[in-house]
Image 1 (cartoon, rainbow, N blue to C red):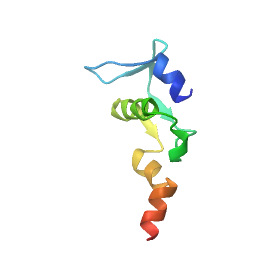
Image 2: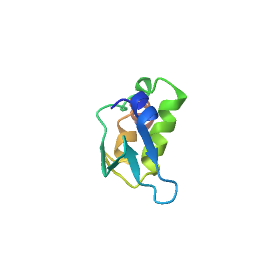
Image 3: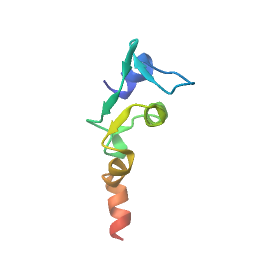
Image 4: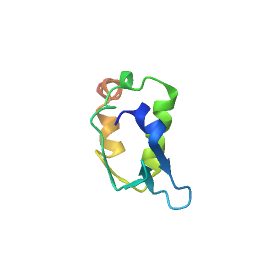
Length: 79
């Protein structure tokens, strides 16, 4: 699903931090996109990403690895 679709269909229980999409519990999130700054079209996309990261779902790749692949981070680290 895209960040836009998730914005519409995702719900995170504030108590348990369990993520639901279309009333189904999500245990694993696999990122196929979001590796470049340009892939976040709006502030809302960043908010969806933050909600996913704060949920109990297992994320693959982890945020640490994901951030290392951002081109801007790579450029900063090389400097």
